[in-house]
Structure formats: structure tokens, C-alpha cells
Amino acid sequence: MPHLRSRYVQHLLKNGLKHKGIVCLFGHRQVGKTTVLSQLASNYITLDRSSELQHATESPENFLVAHASKQLPLAVDECQLAPQLFPALKEHVRTDKRPGLFLLSGSVRFSSRKAIRESLTGRMLTYELLPFSVSELENKPLNTLVLQLLQRKSFDGLRLRPASTSLNKHTRAVQYLKNGGLPGICFVRNNRDRNNIFQSQLDLILDRDLRLVCDTSLSLDALNNLVRQLALLQNVPLNLSELAKRTRISPPTLRKIITGLESIFFLRIVRCEGTETHPVIFFEDQGEASYLISLRLAGEPTSPTYSNLDLERLAFAHLRIPFAYTTGLSWEVIQYRKRGGAYVPFVFRAEGKTLGFICMQEALPSLGASRSARSFLETYPTAMMVYLHPGKNARVINSQELVLPMQMIL
Image (cartoon, rainbow, N blue to C red; front, side):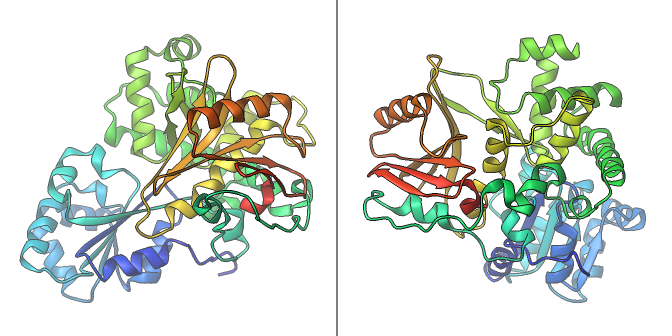
């Protein structure tokens, strides 16, 4: 298959199957979970097939015995469709303590479904498959530069070569925001066909997946309108009262739906520290976000260069990749915002260390970026700051501040 790529998550799954009876892979619909499962397990079942779903629902114990007796691991795709299966899984691994029995996948966080959560808490290893990064699309090794920077005590003595090309001349990066990183969509060259697939997928996500975790009577049209509004509000502190005016949906219902959208890996909610109390949201796949934005901005000219929000969208999609695919690493991403204007869009914490990222157009920090960095470093004295820009040159400013080309993290 010409579009087949090796996924960074595969080594995590292989290692997990050596240690635990149940290993689960989560992720956005059509992010590539089925392909990964079929590559790691020849004994593969999908609950999207009505006959298999009926079997798993009506006789879960027999379902497991019938399929798990063939070859291990048994891979069960879209397993959240049959909550009745999970008590049987719990009992199976209680009596059979071998590792590598089951490899599950789901498009819904199990924590959002009570029957599943209560059955398997502490009994499985979980991993998340993110949309393709630029490096993954290019079949390159995992880019660990961000982790290497985080592990440093200072930037003194750091030597980095300039990037080979500017961001505007990086073909994959130029296309990434429009195409996104979902395998079934990002390789479609025809814009019309790709947009049709985007809309069909959105309808399925909103009318099926969301309703699995969120009891709502809102119409599909109302839900489509909501996600279009959310696409325009990426990285804007989320004000539910203002969003309610735009969508004519009550704040309590909006809160429930946005939580549901995060549970199905459609959105990521990023909390803020500083004096801003509202969180911000990012779309898991920036191709979907671009499609939704284009529906609202039809007829308006597109900028030939990257806006700050474009750079932030690229950064969000890529900065988290090495954290998500590093074994045993506990990490979090937040945003630093103060009502006085200080703003650091991404702050990563791992292993007791903190690294902030500011996206900018210039090759050197502007006065506003410098003030934001100063406020951030005064609040977190042991942290360090990286300025990301679309040019080619890297530069150490001082022991705590570094200028880095955006394409070096892709």
C-alpha cells in the first residue's frame, strides 16, 4: 500500500503486550487504529460488523472463548460499542494471568463509559494514537529534539545547525494544516473529494460517536454549527456565555458536549495557569479544523504566509508527539496566560522540568514575546523558554531562552 506508514506507537504496544493481559489503543476516528491492530495481530475482529457486535453483546463470554482460542493476542476493534464485553474481559484476565491476551482499540475514552471504566481500571495498559506528524508522514524516526531540550539544565553550550529550509518552502508542512494527519483523508489530493470525506466523517462523529458518551437531543445541524464555531475559537479562552450566543445552545449543554467531544478524541481541552481561568481548546486533527474554518470563511482570501495561530496549530500538533510516544513518561501540557497580556501558548511539564514555547513571525523575539517570557520565567524560575519561528536560524539567547526554527520540531 503506497500510503502505509510505520506508526511511532507500535513499539509501545509491542512492549505493553509483554507485560499486561489487556492493552488498549485509543484515538480519533480514522486515525489509523485498525491498521495498527491488523499489523500487530493476525487474530483481528471489529465490532463495526453487526454479527460480531451482536455476538459480543449477547454472549460476551462465548465471544471471547471462541476468538481468543485461535491465536493471541485477540485484537478487538471499536470495542466501546459493546460495554457488556468488559466484565467478561475482567474475569478472563483474572483467571488467565498471561500477558498479551487482548489488544483493544476504541474511539471513545473508556473513562467516559461507566461500565467499561469500572471493569478495567488498573487491569490494562492504555496508549493513544495521534494523527500523523510531518516526520511520520515522511517515514522519519521520532523527532525527540523537544525532549532533549527539556532534559537540559540550561541552553548554555547548545549547538544547533540552521534548518535546511524555511517553513514556507517545506512542502509537507505547507500542506499539513489543510490536509491534517488522518490516514484516510490526508493522502486525498483532490480538494473536493477530501472535503466530502471530511464532512461525512464529521457527520458520523457527531451523530454516532458523540451520542455514545453524551445524551443530547441536539440535531446534527446544530452540532455541526457548534464545531464550526469551535474551529474559529481554537486557542481563545473558552467563554461559554459568548459561545451560547453564537450557537443558541445553553452553557450547561455546551459544557456537556465539549466534554463529550474530548472523550471521543475530537478536541483537546488545555487548561490555563496565570490569571486566566478559562481553558482553551485545540482540534485533535488540524485538517478537520481547517475544513470547518473554510466553511465559515468561504470567499475570503487566504494568507500566503503563516499567521501566529497557524504556527500555534502546527506546534500543538507536533510538540506533544515525542511526549505521547515515550515509554513511562508522565507529562502534561498547559497554557500560561495573564490578563495583562503575558501569554505562552504551550508549557510542557515532565520529570519535574518545565519548558515553554512561544510562536512568532520574527527571527528574534518581539517586545511582546520577551515580556511574556519574562513573566513566565519569573513565575517558574527553573523553567526554560523556546521561541519558534518559520525561518531557518537557531540561536541561544541566554541560559534560559532559545530561538528555534519551527520545522525542527515537525
